[in-house]
Image (cartoon, rainbow, N blue to C red; front, side):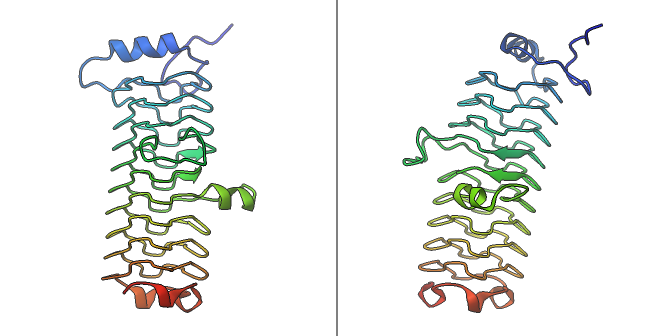
Length: 252
């Protein structure tokens, strides 16, 4: 006998856009629609307002989420691999241990514009895996502790895709985040907690780290050309600072 459709069940059948739209439309004001563990893979969910839905463990592989409102949604342990997230709003969402592998946020990788970038302002990305180009993205105030940018994939992929150039991390928590070889050129990292972060080989040229906490951070091979290090906390306790590139060109 076929399994009956059940949102929030441990095993869920693939859903249709119509079913999802109905669930979202019928949700009572202030009530979070429950789409936990739902199979939403490959669906066109663009421009939908998810009303802070429960999407814990949901499979969104290959879904089109462009211009969707996922602010405040629970996406913990959800798979957002190969999704389209152009101007998607994830502000304040719980994305703990979610995966974002190979997501597409821009029309072309040659013109990664701020106007197309998604927003993760205030989101919880602790323990999440991000292997996607997310340049000029809003991560202000986000919890990104223990974030990973390379896990179980070819080294060339995470070097090419870990692009956060020009992104705004102001006030974010990146403690113990793993960002080796990440592109962080011109990133705004003012007062960011980088305690114990792995930044070996990262491109931090012209990044603004004013007031950031670098206690125990690993900087071996990191490029500090033009990086602003004014008021940095724990710089004397950072690891590999002597082996960083262009250390003498940093602004103290």
